[in-house]
Image (tube, rainbow, N blue to C red; front, side, top):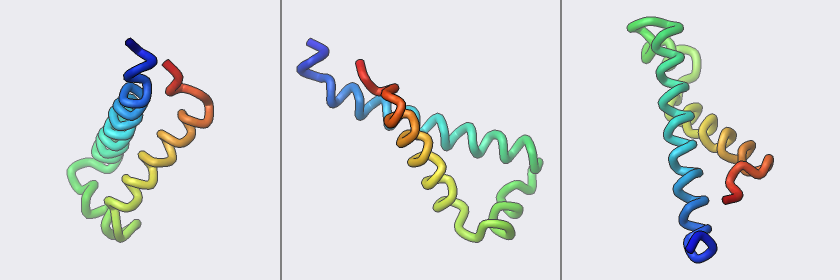
Length: 71
């Protein structure tokens, strides 16, 4: 059963990890910078969603390199 659905399981784990990484990144930024965190991101980074996406991709890639997505 798991072998037949192994790739789907790995893909779902990667998607969930990316969503959790993005959520935690935003949550930590909101706690750190307070209610003005979106303005802080726009002035310091410029394209905030690109930074968020790059962070999530890097997180999933590092977990994948360490073999975390093997069932």
